[in-house]
Image (cartoon, rainbow, N blue to C red; front, side, top):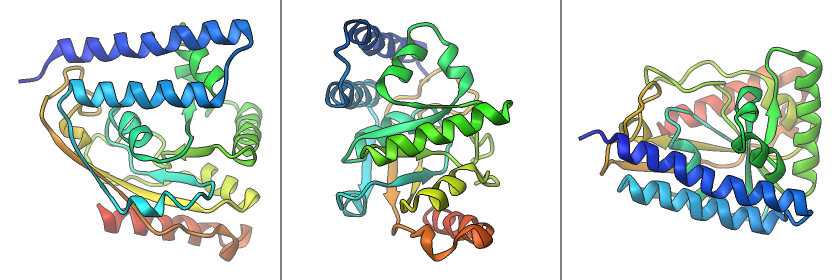
Length: 232
């Protein structure tokens, strides 16, 4: 039976890791390692509270020690904890600017290294891309949902080009990932969590953007989308 209690518990858990991060920032004590530990713990608690049975397929493709731009489909808010728990390295999300306006949580996201993208302001969007480049160059993997929003139908939507521009500009490989079943935990427009769902995340073979370049960006987009679609 869908549970509002589990949903509210998720909000509490999110605030529970956000407040210490904000306090650490005020004290000048924020570190990547400390944020990683909080995020991994938070992700596991959210998934455990919802009794999510999770399977990771081809985890070795994400565990090469390389820095990746991770791209996946997006069906549910539970994609976020699933990816953070499943990915072996430091992972930060490129997220819409509206999320960074949420009190406490938004500040914690910014301080812990998440990347803000303002889709309504071209100049600020470019600033976000530059921040993402800095994160990648410092060894932080960046996760992008190229559909731009959660799928309401479950079908894979059209891909936006921003993340692919980032890949071509930096040369970092794209790691495709397919997420299956999170919409059964919490649908895109849902507010009540369904306990006991089984979900899977599968990592595909990395794609080198250097084989495409600016003139072939549409081919790069098509290739990555085909890989994710085939895994779905």
